[in-house]
Length: 112
Image 1: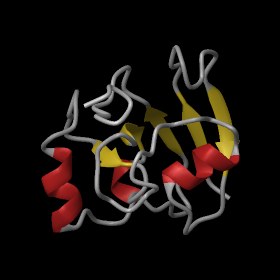
Image 2: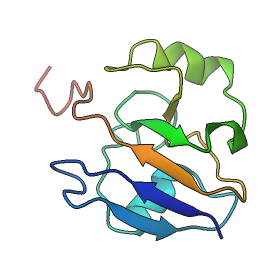
Image 3: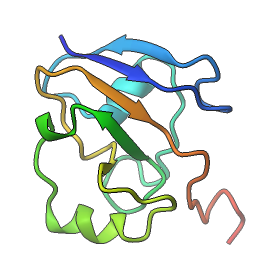
């Protein structure tokens, strides 16, 4: 099982963490199953950007982005070349290092 190292995040994971999850699992599912409360306002249906993560190591091992994910990522706060929507990024057998951005655009949470 691949290991996911989550870099410290002030709200979701203040101390950082290392978790494992089976290949074929999305990063978002792996985080949630390990009690790391990443936002996922659209219930992992690839309709928002709240679960945006930056994959610092292991990016190339993930499944390819589809057009819908690419379009949504253009709206994500703090977009970087290794950005993915964690609900769409599927684990292979490679370990990852993941950063959860400090801010996400969540209109429901922000009362819009």
